[in-house]
Image (cartoon, rainbow, N blue to C red; front, side, top):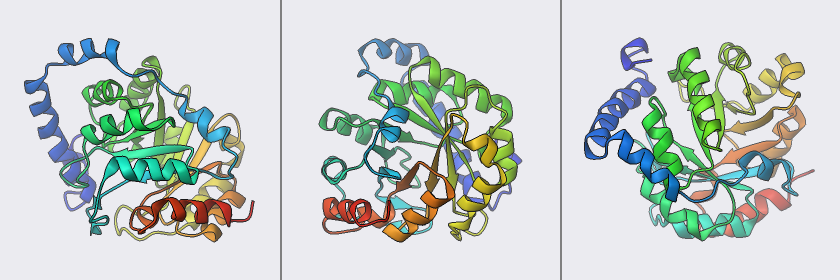
Length: 276
């Protein structure tokens, strides 16, 4: 799907449009064949879904290494991705999410590559994937899972990218925002991991009820071998308890953790003080 197929005022449209240009430049600098040849020296894949399912915490935590966002600007001014990542793990995060978009989130593939040797937990490449090149790049730098956003991908691209990610040994976190997107995603073959984003992409408003509503509407499908992750708007143990009660196994939390002075303690507080 191209940017012209989305409302041009939509922030996702701007991101996708820039991403197309970015990928073209990446292909010029390093052709796909040369990138694929680097796969043989990529770090061993770690089991992202298994780490979420086997965590002693419920819900298990994917902690996000995040410097900025289009809606909030700079979130973490003293941004050291490796220090943040290791603090997350000390606090009890089961997995980490690393923003790799540079233009809108001030992230990078280099951040993920630098974090990889410093932690034992699996890493999610948080990227706006519209091309197989990005998936190969994620694997080369050490990703164990890759984000796929239903809102910017056709059904065919979702299935093709899912197959490619699995063929490389990784897992895909397939993100939805609405019931219509969830219904599209539930038709995919070998779906393992679904993310429900509580943020409305039109208004940027956040409502945790999105998770509970979608879980309730499609509970018979989402409880059969699929690990569900609630994303956005999660700030407190009460928030985690709310989405856990809705039936999700895991949560993805970034902003409310990364902006704290003591990141490790912020994770400990979020995980240890919540109702189980």
